[in-house]
Each structure stands twice: as structure tokens, then as C-alpha cells.
Amino acid sequence: MSDSALVAAATRVRVHAWAPYSDVQVGAAVLADDGRIFAGVNVENASFSHVCCAERVAVFKAVSEGARRLVACAVVTDHDQPVSPCGACRQVLHEFGPDMRLILATTDGVRRETTLRALLPEPFEARHVLDHRRA
Ligand code: THU
Image (tube, rainbow, N blue to C red; front, side, top):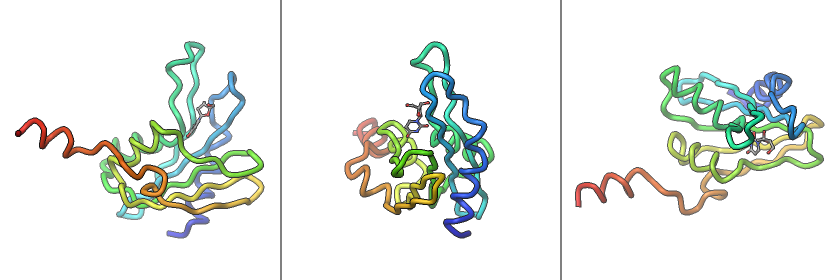
């Protein structure tokens, strides 16, 4: 699966973003280790605190379909430069793909590649819950 296919999937769904309040339309697509792609958009709400980012929607779709290991995530917006996932999304992405690559892109074709580890060097992890419980 090429990065371009992942970016294309994120770009395709982006038009479905529900962002009447911010007017920031985000498309995201995650690649599972079995080759499947799951795409999501940001979904805003008149009650602002209930917004869900595109990355998390994509992850939740993947997990809902049985994908548990995610290897890459593309994020597409129409900013001048690519934007990176918010802190909450980094944490959620980590749960299912600590070693994932991130392809951050704009609709004009600017692209930047990085890793989740680079953006979230000290995640809160399952062991911090499970080991603590067993102690
Ligand atoms: N947003 C995302 O979808 N992903 C991010 O990583 C950051 C922000 C959305 C949430 C909200 O709908 C809009 O961008 C403005 O914050």
C-alpha cells in the first residue's frame, strides 16, 4: 500500500467533514497491518466539547471492523502547510500503532512524513495501567 493511496483515501473523505463551526475540514486514513484502509473526518457539534477529530474517527472505524494493528496514518487539510495530529489523537493512535508512520499532507500536495514516536515520545501506555494494577 503506497503512501499516495493513503493520502488519496484521506483526501477523498475530507469533503464529508462536519465542520460548520471551525471551517477546518480534516480527512484522515489509517492503514491496518492486513492492508485495509479506514478513513474518517472531523465531526463537530454545536456543543463544542463533543468534537471528534478525523484521526480518532478513522481509528475507531478500524477497531470497529476488527483491525487492531495500525501501521500508518495520513492526515489531509487545506492549510498552507501540513498539520499534525492533536495530543489526544496522538495518544489514541499510540494504542493501536505505536510504531506507525504519519503522512501529513495538504490538498495542494505539500507532504511531510514523520513518526508517531517522534510526535509522542513519552506516551501513557497499557503497562502503566496493567502493571500498576498487578503491583
Ligand atoms: N481536528 C482534527 O480533525 N484533527 C486534529 O488533529 C486537530 C483538529 C479538527 C477538530 C475540529 O473539528 C477542527 O479540526 C478545528 O479544531
